Amino acid sequence: MKTWIKRTSGGLALALAVAAQAPMAAAETLADALVGAYSHSGLLDQNRALLRAADEDVAIAVSALRPVVSWAGSVGRTWSQSNNVRTGFRNSYTANTQAEISVTAELTLIDFGANRLAIDATKETVLATRARLISLEQQVLLRAVRAFMNVRREVENVSLRRNNLRLLRQERRAAQDRFAVGEVTRTDVALAEARLASAQSLLAASEGALEQAREEYAAVVGRRPGTLTPPRSLPKTAKSEDAAKAIALRTHPDMEAAQRAVKVSDINILRAEAAMKPTVTLQGRVGASSSLSLQDDTQFGSLSLNAGGPIYQGGRLSALLRQAQARRDASRGELHTVRHNVAQNVGIAWSQLRVARATAAANQEQIRAARVAFQGVREEAKLGARTTLDVLDAEQELLNAQAAAISAGVDEYIAAYTVLSAMGLLTATHLHLPVRQYDPAAYYNLVKDAPVKSKQGEKLDRVLDALGKQ
Image 1 (cartoon, rainbow, N blue to C red):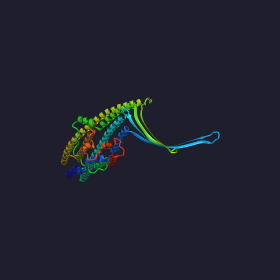
Image 2 (cartoon, one colour):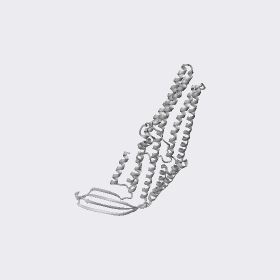
Image 3 (cartoon, helix red, strand yellow):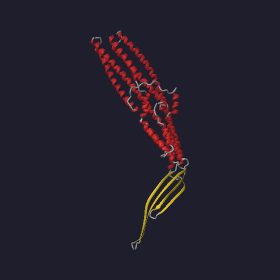
Image 4 (cartoon, rainbow, N blue to C red):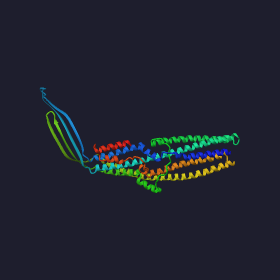
């Protein structure tokens, strides 16, 4: 009996030592995972391209303030023939080949701000698209945090399960040896075998969960996980829930995107009103024509000031104005919803963090108590006051407490980063990640003035090449 107890307690001590030292061999950090996710994400690449497309809308709107120059050319042949109806003979026949080319330029002089308003609307749309890109960046980084921490959780769970399985095999052998000398009954052996079979099943489940966590990590980060080292400290969030909500309402990208959408809808109402007013344009045209048959050349030109505006379009313009007003109301409602959702998400995340911290503290107390209980049961078993089953149960309680502590520690880190995301601060900039960050202004500054092929166009090509290499 004493030999079996010493063997069991020695094996348990070895298992706990191995489990405690396993994370120390880690080499890949959470920052490495975040850098990999930021660089690997196809979702970020997709939405960066959509942002560049929105940048081009500004260039398109700016082009409406500039002259529109176009050219036209034509070549045609005309002929005529007259016949005498009485005699049937042809009286005359003429033919001429005419060629013409012209250049036309048109410039809008007065449109009551319609084109300027279009530029303002597209600029606000660009800013809203930038905010949505930051929101997606937060989603990518938070997913990376969860993937990293879940791999660590499953690695440590597998380690505990394997150590538990090793101990139970020793206990089964000890039970069989004691049964052979008549110290225990077949029931004790069966209990050890049942506990061993259960441990094998739980180990298989843990190994499956670990493989799934590794696949998720590879999908997010772009590579299979190596040995992961635990983070050194929790990220800094806010001093209180109210402070976190205040920061979120000021800085969260979803709030900014919704606010920009309201501004766009306000501008679109002014654009709809401007569309009901007249437009004044200046048009010039120069060209030349040549009669190839008559060897006659002509040059021509014209300059005109044109004005026009709608009178009646079947109620279309009034409907467009009402539609813009309805969309303005909808965007304001969306802003109201987003505001409450942001505050709610902070509250939920803060509550999860508070629960995770309390659970982690309670689990440490549970481990302490379970260790004391195991040691006590072991000593009592030496005196014959406890059975084999009592020792097995106490050992299992200690291992379960350690597994719960692992999950609680992981949940605490995930909750802390979730709070950071809910505040709108889970970005590469705020985390000071060592990555080449995407600069949304670099492309915008080169296209906002609608450049054509020039030195600025060459700079644009270089920026596009750089974006393609990221």
